[in-house]
Length: 415
Image (cartoon, rainbow, N blue to C red; front, side):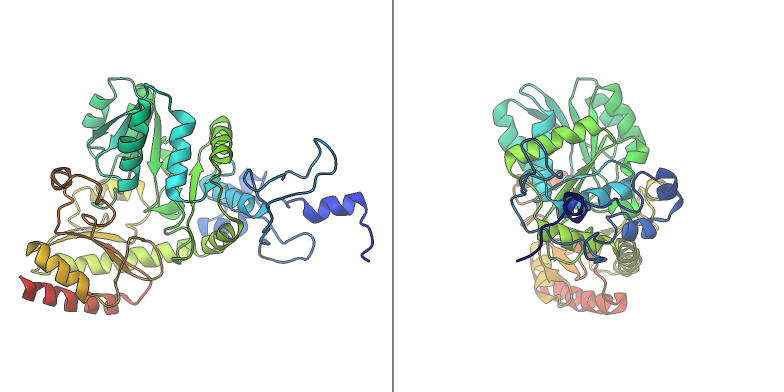
């Protein structure tokens, strides 16, 4: 029979340790991002000395007495491993702990249900992830939430849209999948002048490459499924803000919806954070090398990457991004037959809907991520059948270029 533990030992055994940087803003601000990625989460486990955060795979937590517990009661509300991830993400963004959810779309749902009421209006960037549009246009519209789409790459269009009151402005920068940018500082100014909160989906960039809060955003949204975890192994989402009251509202809605992150997936995501800066640097440099090759290829009608020399918004990209990221948008000559042959012919770029992972992926937005957008609307937004999205992984970029060369040759034959 195990000996009983003194109450102070029990407390030390289960209480979450402080993160090495928690409560020490001056130290956090003095450290580089890569250092904070590793040391921004909890320190070694106080019981065993384990350097990695334990996986607390428990739904239930025994309470000392009515109203007295160690911060955890039921994992639908919060869980020690998930809380560790939330604190680590907050350290990277310079915010209180994040609110982590089961998926990126769960984060978007929590955001909307926490901030919107019947009769409210949302100004939505024209080019965003298809699920975001679907949630607002097909589901929340049934509850008298109105959504108006605007070209978020045009600050004047945003200002005009906000002459009418709105509750939220939701943008992506770079946008999925065209990679068009939004001037975040101008968007924040327009949103706040119109009485709205600015929400930036920063999934493509991650906190390693872009900090929307520094440009005036109120909320940053992530699908941590993508580059933050980075290994095609988890589903997850996160909301971050400097407004503690807003974060508490998000937590309440998450608990009510039953949409928390799972402990194991939070643990995997914590592990992914440790290499985030290294991975994003490699994604960015390889994507730029691949994009430069594609820009010169006769079978490619158009190619976009924010740091590519002829990218129309390159100056803005260099002003608000630390690097270009791992995404490329390209449009092929030859229409649908060429695209289908291209997709069939890649060997290192796997056909899939995810992005931001170690493996390179290729996506056809018109039939995959944005298939729910009406065809005429897709064409107007530049999401036609010839558009292909590449997520450049961590392979050798020369091998990726050789793979694309073979696929482009096959696509040329299909023309």
